[in-house]
Length: 382
Image 1 (cartoon, rainbow, N blue to C red):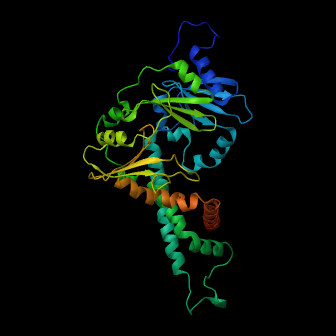
Image 2 (cartoon, rainbow, N blue to C red; image 1 turned 90 degrees about the vertical axis):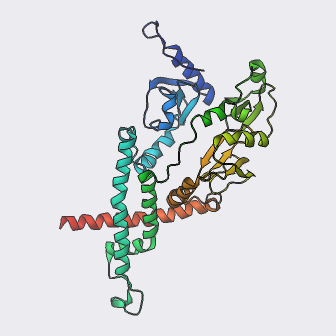
Image 3 (cartoon, rainbow, N blue to C red; image 1 turned 60 degrees about the horizontal axis):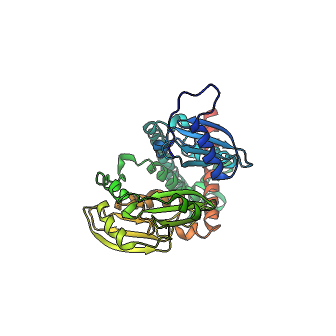
């Protein structure tokens, strides 16, 4: 379904594209649309990943969750979904955390520079604070009055102890946040060969599709995606719970894994190397994972012997390339993701262990920050 600009309609008559977007949203969520508007971007669609879908149809649904769907004007698919609760917590969490107000984030380079120059001085403050905290700590025989390891009292005591306990963690969190915008482009991988991904995705093209037969086997599906990666025509059906079913085209039978065909076709994606190792993963590894959940599995991991040491993660049913990581991005995973999210599978797959760790780190960081702000404010007043 493709939305285009309409003309020749009477005043007050809803455009066909608006009505079509409303139908898509209602079918997707099973609720009636209460409002439809066309937008270029807003707080929840400001990222560059939505560029190919703009302008977007924003559809508000009359459900208890306050759901809003964003329908792509280029594909007719649902590009984004938010609820009232998600928006509330994101205003308190991710928006201030990432310095993500729309007025700033819509200019990618300006946002990047702000993150760099805000987090940079914080790194310097954290390093000097840790160093001074260590200098003012006596753990040997020569202690402060009363056998104390710290000379401070009150707010200064809270700041000193919290800084000693969680200072390194706080520093790693700020430092990894600084790395999130890749200063110096140290971790930006080289561009893949021009046209390689397009040729891999195009395959041999879609065959003729029996729409009536597809409608019969797709009962209950909310989304259908047609792909031709690695020369494998497929349709992926997703239901309301996100469960998927992959069918072959044009036969409309359940697809089987096509590992040899994918391995052969994937060589076009890394023409400077050969496959050094192929593995079908049935459990997450250090680079294919999700925080607090299990990623799509099984997944085919191909390691190449090219200069960049590229790894590809591919869907064994559809051939889709799910992730591409080279040596730079694997290093970045540890320097950024690990120290910013503490997202080891041993933690994230064993909740609430991961939640408890983050709560402890966050509380220590909060005590360090609040006490530091209060002490600084008192010093400025005097």
